[in-house]
Every structure is written in C-alpha cells, then in structure tokens.
Amino acid sequence: METLKQHQQMKSVFDEYATIYDATFTHSLNGKYQRNKFYELLKIFLLKEANKSSSTHQFSVLEINCGTGEDAQWLGKKGYTVMATDVSRGMIEKAITKNKDLSNVTCKVCAFEELKTDFKNQQFDLLLSNFGGINCVSPETFSKLISDFHSLLKPDGKLILVIMPPIYIWDWVYFLLKGKLNSAKRRLSKAEITIGNNIQSTYYYSQKDLSKLCNGYFEIKKSAALGQLIPAPYLEKKLSWLFPFLQKAEKVFANILPHDWSDHTYYELHRKS
Image 1 (tube, rainbow, N blue to C red):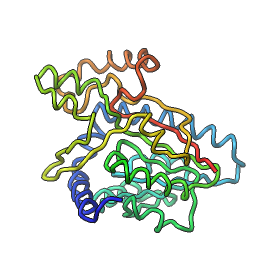
Image 2 (image 1 turned 90 degrees about the horizontal axis):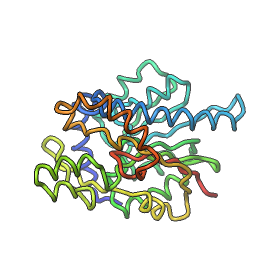
Image 3 (image 1 turned 30 degrees about the vertical axis):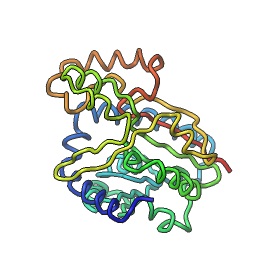
C-alpha cells in the first residue's frame, strides 16, 4: 500500500484542490460534458439494477474519492443511500455543504486503505470511483484495493470505475504542436502532476491493465469513453467555439475509436463470488 508520506501528500494535494475543483473541472465545459455522459450511463445501469431488485430493496452506494460531492448529490436526489468518502477533509467539507439537505447522503473522511476497516461490517450494492481518483494509486496498491472492494460489496455487487487511460488524443495534438514530445507521452508512464503548490503521482490504466489488476475478483462487463474528442479544460478558452461540433463528432466515433483512447473511461465490473 501507499506509504504514510504518500498518504499525507495526497491529503495535502486534494485539500488544496478542493478550493478550485468545481470551478476548474465540475463547472468547465469539459467537466459538464463528461459528467452528463457519465450520468447517462449510470441511469442505464441503475435502471437494470432496479429491475432485478424488489421494490422494498434500498440500493446502497459506497463512493470513494467523492470530491466535492457532486455525484453523491445526484444519487441522493434520486433516493439512493450514499456513503461518500474522500481522503481530503477539504473535499468532504464541500461535500457536506452540498448535501446538507439530503438525509440519505453521509460524507466521511476516509482514505482508500481505511475502507475495509471503517466499513468492515457493511456491504454495499455499488462501489463507485469517478473521474480518476483511482489513478492516484500505484498498480501494487490498486491490486490490493481490488481485493478490498470485493469484500465491501454484496455477492451480486457492482463496481463502477471512471479511470484516466494512457492515451488522450488532445494531449498528443496540443503538446506535439508545441514541440513537447515528453508532455505528449506523459500518460504512457507514471506522471507527476502539479496541483497548486503540491505534486501528485499519477498512474494511467488501460482496459488491459484493469483486467489484469482485477485478478479474478471482478469481470469487466461494459466500457465507454468519456471525452474522446472533447478538449481538456486547459484548452477551453481557445477552443470553446469547437465544442458543439466535437460533441456531435464524438457520438460518431464513440464505437470506432478504442474506449480507452479518451480523457476518462467508464467501466462496469461485476463481483465474482
């Protein structure tokens, strides 16, 4: 697992990021587009699960790296019971404020490695990690967490991960035009991402990587690209006029380009017994 120093570093990074996260991602054109597409996929998933369950079953969600609580709020307003967790107290404070009127949403400071202990007597219907939170852990830690996720889910439980893959077209287009080959290739290996005054180690995972890391605990049942052709937030001011065209183009290319050639990739995984 991650060292104590790495754990403290992650807390510092995301405590600082909490003050600007909604402005720089949630409310950006890129962030809105990807989150809306994510919600379209999540609606389909939840409808399937509802059709399998009795009307009296209260569907439960454990959200990790919940950030400022945007997804917890969306789920909570639809009546789901949500335990939203994040390593950052700053993020959780934002999430608590955002969800203060929802009695079915609980927000708690909890690091990845604390999940199995903090919720040792609980099992959930769904474990959710959105928008690259899991990219903050090394392959070794990821492999261990997969085992923990398995124990936190009910026998028919599901795992939804939204992960940053190794190839994002706009990184290559933008940085190669600027003559920065190393920056264009940054997702192909471990990267050190600067957030404010802090640096976060970041790892990028393809579908092949994810299948290997699942190690028999989960089976990937569905994947979908989020943001294949949509420019990154750092390009929004220059390319906002292109967004309507690129959104239409992305629908055309959705099943032509690999799903893990995108800013983020959505995965539905089923727990194996």
